[in-house]
Image 1 (cartoon, helix red, strand yellow):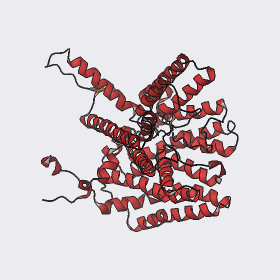
Image 2 (cartoon, helix red, strand yellow):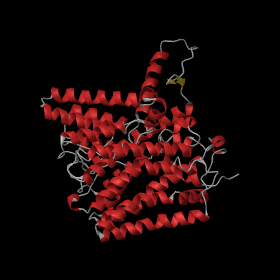
Image 3 (tube, helix red, strand yellow):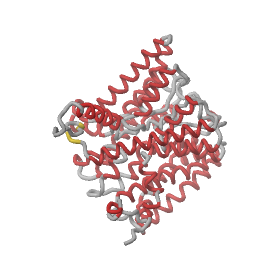
Image 4 (cartoon, helix red, strand yellow):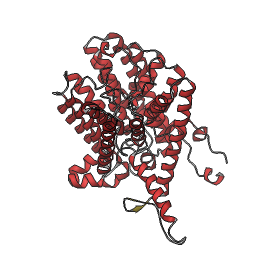
Length: 483
């Protein structure tokens, strides 16, 4: 390890600061729309707090003119900027939720749940909120699903920069940089695809939801697989058509945004089978069908079967919407836990371990069984998509899966020690780590504040895929190298 340490890069604080200033305007964009709505509807207390929240990003953008972002940004520094963008946005948004009537700890929880596109909520009385409060939550989820991550990874990495920072975090399509002239060009293509998908969702939702603003806001949270809705019962009080449309949009957002880029370039068939779209659709349909069969086997009627199917689609896409209470028969809960743990595809807005990593583990098991039946001198590499899997990718997969398991165990133990029943504690732990947002009853305003903070950290770890946040808080990341 000493030899490896001798060649490691340390994060340079001045470079991280300058790169963060260069992306400060993106943080400001998170607060601009809800501030405009608050001013339009004369929600003055909320407008004042949002106005204060937008000042630091504006100041940072002004300083960026004098101190431009460095061109030699290192991988670890890019990751640090990504983490700072998430943490900074969550911190600046928290006072707005206090203004809406939440306690400081609950406000931090709500803010992190928004920017991580999780959807777990401690908010009460949301029907009495001004429209700007709902816009804040939905817009944060839309930005957290794509725009902030894109600004923190893709936009600050120029052509020729280390692509490991992006690919290790599973961001949208960054493993296909060869098809575009630069990372920034790719970022623009992906943002266009994300915006078009959002616009299509809005057009579909407007006639299906009771009011235009509910259709608009739920479109934002569906595309980001976030799960916040203006109503306390999530999607339960909306029509079946509205529920089904929302969950289909979530499914469309659970596979790589590169699918939409490639549809335009290569056609639908090539895009469907050339990205993770086919695998994701197959996985979602298989799990949803299993849920419907299990619900029928436990004596459910047609409405209950449809509820289970919709809830399962929400779980597998990590959207967090619910059309009925999550309390189900143990086999269904176990299936839902597995679906949330795997999550969506890499390059999507969905959370979880990602379908590709689950498939990598399955291939590793199959290879281990194969090697029991072949001679020792046989060459049997681990393959993925017809090519030998790179060691870097395999190591990252093992590390993230191990960190996920260890974090889940620690969080579950903390909730158990706090008196939360075992199954709801495990369910809500997985929901937080996979940034899903479904709850089996553990996440309530009555939960003790230390446990709320535990789940807050879990949401951040899950959204930042563990390695990013852990790397940034390690002293070795910042310590100067000693000769």
